[in-house]
Length: 183
Image (cartoon, rainbow, N blue to C red):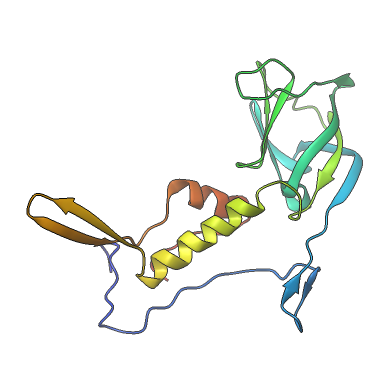
């Protein structure tokens, strides 16, 4: 409906999940065996394996599943890892948002200025759990089964949630999905 609610009486509720089957998924057994891989001295620049916006570097393609960086250089200068956005160091790897943040300055826009080594794959310690949570939120919202009870002085009000959190939308977007509550 235009206001974001779902008319359960009008027709069957449908939603669409666009998904690309990973190579490690066995259609016969239904079991996925997520694997990880290492990468060495891969070059990055805006439009090549990443998108750069000031101090934020967003990985693209298979590199969006990076969960560990063992070394990184920018214009030949080695950078050190920070433990937070406000920490000391050259960069901070934000696994939840799938980006690399340059601490205190912007990333170089020179072609192929950044070289990194590390590990990637959805089986790593990266965003797989966040993706799972986002999909659970999406299914709950689309099904109409996400109910909240709100206690008031006059009794209980039941509310059905039909939208997902902004964080879940961001996680889905980092994997190339778009949340549409009208499907």
